[in-house]
Image (tube, rainbow, N blue to C red):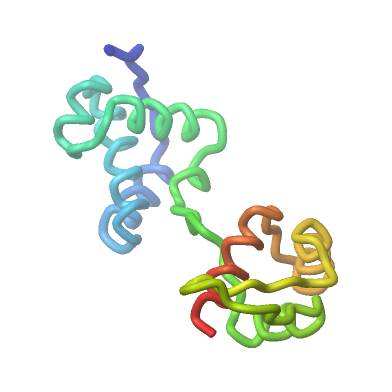
Length: 146
């Protein structure tokens, strides 16, 4: 599906910052910076996607975010937020996780706190925003290893 073309006009300082990002940043940020640079050089979304070996949708999204938010939109964000091991241990201890029994290879656990309560506590205690579902995933992964 062809996307509407987006051409970015860069000023001197943006060009300097993009050049820095294309040399020094992590892989994802470099790729996004290259997309903006290529757009500035009048490449179409289709041409950019082929050159960077990614989807047109991704390129279009990067360019639109750049137009809206500027240079800060290029930085790659962590896909999954994590807790430090000691934070996770504290959470498991305070939320009252306890082993009930095993059913074959499956272990049964229970807690005094809901995942929503854990999510709110994490935000309040450490300033880390995790959805209740992400908290569930993290807890289950940790408990599976015990």
